[in-house]
Length: 64
Image (cartoon, rainbow, N blue to C red; front, top):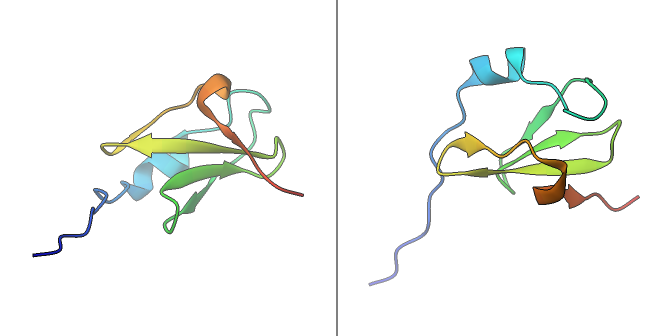
């Protein structure tokens, strides 16, 4: 039996209050990769077990 890993949904209210810790700019949610994207910083912050990890050291650099 094959089971897909599912990510808990992100509470949309989090997007209203969370900002990029580096730029203080807005974030967008990438459902496919389960990340919060900071276009201004060029970083993607992971979401693990429904919890956004807002540390620059944990973020993935976005490709230009």
